[in-house]
Every structure is written in C-alpha cells, then in structure tokens.
Length: 316
Image 1: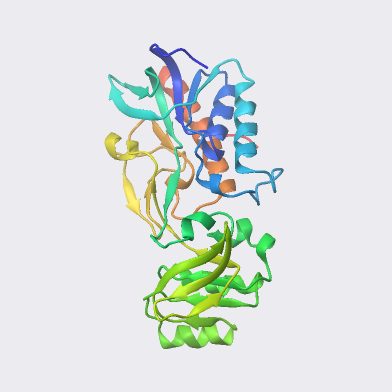
Image 2: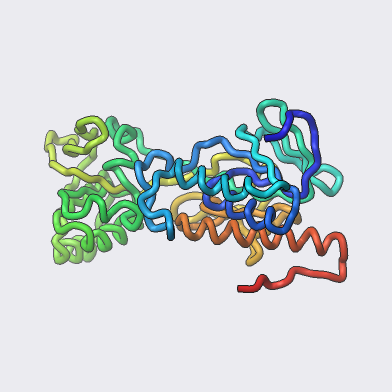
C-alpha cells in the first residue's frame, strides 16, 4: 500500500480484476513502477462461482481477484490502493490521478480497466436472484443449471440468438417476449427448436431467496421456471474515457472504448482493457486485453525515452 501523499509512477492501472491485474503483472515483470487502484467490486461479484477461466474454473470471483492481485504484488515495484479513483486528467505530458483517501499520483501512462456494470430492468425479484438463478451467459453458468425449466427474458434481437443457443443446456425453454414483437419466421424457427413463446408483459418474479420459482405476466399467468436468462445493457463504471476524450462507440449491449491492436485508446498514453473495450464480453478476453495493455504501455515508455525504438511485437 502507498501513503496518501503525491508520488510518481510509470503507470497507473485503474481496476484490478482480470484485465487490470494482467496489465499490472506484465508491467511489474518489466520492473516498472505501477500503482493499481481497485474498489473490490468486480462485475461478476454477484456470482457464487466463476467458470471458463483456465486454472480457475469454479473459484469464486473474490478468490480469483485475490489471487490475481497477489500475483502482481509479489513484485517490489507494484502498489495497490483499495480506493475509488475520482479523477484522471492530462498534466503536462503526464497524467494526474486522484482517488479517495486523498491519494494523488502523477504517471506517464494510464490503463483503464475499471470494467462495466450491468443495468438491470426494474422488475421485482430480479436483482435478488442476479448471478444465482438469473443469469446472462450460458457459457459461464449454464452447465451448473442445465436441464432445468428455463426462461429467457427478451431484451432485443440478441435474445433470439441466445434462444437458439440455449437448447444445448435445456430442453425446457420459454421465451418471454415482454412486449417485443417477433417476426413470423422467428416464431416458426423457435417452435421447431422446441422453444415455448410466452407473449405479454412480465410484471414480477416469484422466488425463494435467490432461487427462481416462476415468472408472472400482466394477464395473471404464472409460468414456472428455475432459471432465467437475460441479456442486459451495460455502462462504464467510471467516466474517465469520456473526461479524457477517448473515442467511444455504441455496441449491441452498450458503449465500448475504441482501442488499437496495442490496446491504446485515441488519447496517446491512455490504454484500456477488458469489457469496456469490447462489444462482447468474457473473462479470458479481458485477461488477454490486460496482458496486451501491460506489454505495450511498457514498450511505449521505452519508445518515449528513445524515439528510435518503436513498439515491438511480443514473443511467445
């Protein structure tokens, strides 16, 4: 940990989940001074287990985060501040980073890895089951809840794609259209796949603790399901891409920061990694993005010191 007074570092990494910890680890192994800020609130903290990440399958999100932080903290050039960053601003060719607990540092490079947050519909009972029996990704959680009566709450066109996927996890699937209009060809295709279609507005979920029991519709129907999938919209957990002027595009599930192949944003010296840089998400992708951000932000520091040295391609 560092003291609250101002210090200077090579790189500040904002966020210490899959992407941020991976970036910090590569920078630490390059013997660069790195300060990492983290709130301890990863996007997947609502899930009891994480799946699909090599070597960590079934570990809790908190355990995965702790292991990742322990990896980079083994190196003497790293510092971790468990506080929320409140501002990032260009400062005479460098960047000033301020955080809670009166932390203030100046750095040469910034890696944005603060992640997204899911925007859940205002539906009674849903938030209580989120990450347990109301889920987003069948690759992450579908195996553990397979072969149960399953629902899919439609939120747009991507839900049709998911409805076609879910047949590999359950043969008892109900699509709740929730006010969305289905084309005749989509209805016919889903019916052929054995998907039941329930039209009408969904008004609430019946649950037992965090366990789904049924979906209630405005017309009074109550349809029993033990699992409910939902593709959410997402938003950045921090505003720094906006305040720094990074290029941002709108994806199918929410905004994402535009980066090049080196994970650098449109603002020189600002790198970004993880879910905030992709139109689609995944822990393995986030870690890979973080590795690139760490390696290439390091190489940019070398290029800055010696303009005749550009970015190299990392080895295997």
